[in-house]
Image 1 (tube, rainbow, N blue to C red):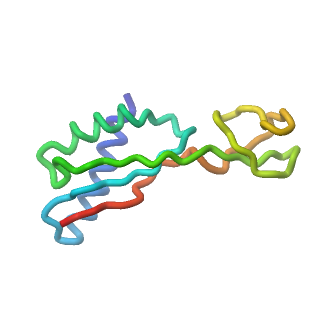
Image 2 (cartoon, one colour):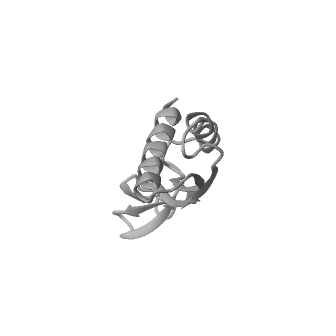
Length: 113
């Protein structure tokens, strides 16, 4: 389950930020996760709860905002919605589509006190 290592990475980033800002605790973490990122949001939530125990982020709420998939179709020369990596263009059926969005995972917001 790679979500555990992702949760540990998020915690490290969050704790580094909280310490730099002299925070007492982390109240909220907001993540953006792309639809095509191969991250299972529910598994990540569970792992985040586990790895934050005893940390500055213990008890912090985790919100996940889903980022839709998008790609550039070389045949249509247009940005098109994508549901899966290496899928066909929904407009022309070509498989020459390069993902341009929806594969990322990033910390969007951290609320501290």
